Length: 148
Image (cartoon, rainbow, N blue to C red; front, side):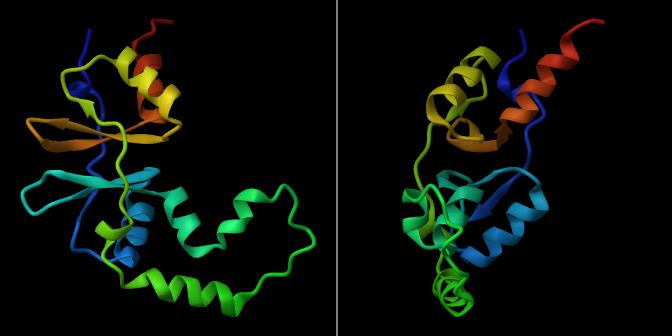
């Protein structure tokens, strides 16, 4: 059975010295739901995801609401929130997540995704980030192995 290092990992990382705005641009470019934030020597500092960006630029109380039709967009307030985080180092906003080892199995990765709720997780080997594995890539790899 192939190991995670053999799956289509996405080179989706950003240095911990980059800004949050740089991370948003890299997320869009990488087309993966999360980036590995790495130190200068390639070690994992944390992860920043699309949901982290959403939480940073929209009011926190939205997570508590079930219906927002009564709200009007406060464009000035939203701009202020984005401006407040734009130039912060991405390392300040990175968070710890489960890490997958390159030698682990696809079944283990599936279990980690199911239990963490993350959409993409870093795959590491020898302390260095090999890339990001998304749920979509994991499922795609499994479907490619099924004979028709």
